[in-house]
Image (cartoon, rainbow, N blue to C red):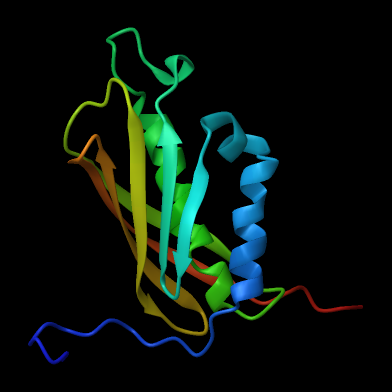
Amino acid sequence: MSEQGKPSGPRFEQFDQRIADAMMRTNDKPEGLPGFLGARFVRFEPGRLVAEMEVKRELITIMGALHGGAMAAFVDHVLGCVLYPLMKRGQWAATTEFKLNYLAAVKTGKLVAESTVVALTSRTAVVRVEVENEGRLVCVAQGTLLVSEPPAKS
C-alpha cells in the first residue's frame, strides 16, 4: 500500500528510455494501421503510455459515430506498446485477448488513451486502457498479452 492507503502499482525491473524515445519518434513517420488511424504517442513513463488520435471522417460510420473497430484497433495498439520499454530488447508482446466496454458514442474531436500495466511477469502482462474524448470517458478495456523471447538463432 502507498502512504495514502491506495494500492501501489507494480514495480518494473527495467524501463529502457531509449526504446520509449524511439517509439515516440515513430510519430514523425507513422506507418501501417497506427499511421492510418493517426495514433500518436504523447508520453511514456514506466508502465504507462498516453496516446492520442484525431477522429477522422474516414473512421465514422453511416450512423455518424466512430466505428468500434477503429476504437478497438487504437486500444490494441496502446495495449501492447506500453510494454516495450519494460521488456528485454528483442522480446515482443502479442495480445492474446482484450475486452472493451464502449461507454459513449464518439463523433468528433480527439481520443486520448492512457494505457497502464497492471501486472507483468516474464511471460505475460495484463494492461488496462482508458480512452477519453473531449474530457469524457468513452471506452475502458483490459487485455492479456504474451511476452515472447526473440527467436533462437540457428
